[in-house]
Length: 193
Length: 242
Image (cartoon, rainbow over all chains, first blue to last red):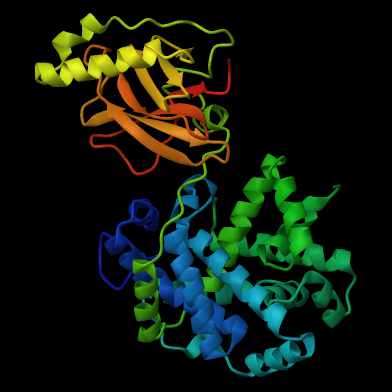
């Protein structure tokens, strides 16, 4: 499945990369279109990692303003605009969670999160529904260790060392499982760079 | 730095600490096959992120748009200009390369340009006088660049903070123009003018400089110019030489 973002309007949507080219030139209308496409994924991911709605909104605002401010840093040759934006969102969320919350708090948060699933949240577009389903399906194809290490790292913001401690697994094994697991996800989802 | 590529998964999942992340990113710069894998894994984790999408509150949109309206955008960082252009585009339309090692004095025949200007005589005379003054400045030095069928040169007088640029042999494509950029040591570009050759010739472009710029570069842009340079760099002159 090729990674792309589609808004609520129907065909043919402008590529996010082309919108970003306009944003670089200061086109605020283009930025509003970018916002419409990415605010759900950005906010949703940050909320998943941070949990607290007020903090999540604060970090999401930082990220989205930075998409405008640093638009010239986006390089289409290095990957998709969605990946650039989502990587930025993930990094900021993880930085915030590591600096402000102790590891024990995060374990408690993770336990709470496992009980509730975000999969029954209101879905926005057909594309996001499809991506969500594909991710869920591909995650089940991983081994337990691959899936747990990836979820702890990506959704929990844990470092691979912390994951190793939590799962009681050697560091080398954690690194390998994360890489193997993501490679399998990549292939399952049909991602190409 | 052995076996750093085993960290590709942890890196993409954001599971490295700050020092490890920096070290890994340095490693990526010199390992092209790692780079492809990392990019694919980052596309993959982006999908993990999209799977958690949730409608953002309306207050977020309002807050973001308000802040954006009063936020300046950062200019692009252009690093290792000619080298980068060569790496990315391979055998592209590259006319010029970096400055010649030795000075080549490029005399400007002012009379040759009179027929090209539709301007009034007054404008033309003033322009010619400014060029003559620049060429006559005691510290004026000229730097040239040449490539496949085209050449360009700039005369710089740091004392008067004036420069000019003239080229020969650049073809003008429909809807396009050429734009000049002064670029500082950090890679920040500043547009100093545009020119549209006819039959490969144009009047010299006069502008203030060099200031703290270390290079003068030429790119092709849509008519009217651009806010930031469009790659590739067609011609680049190193202003620090000679």
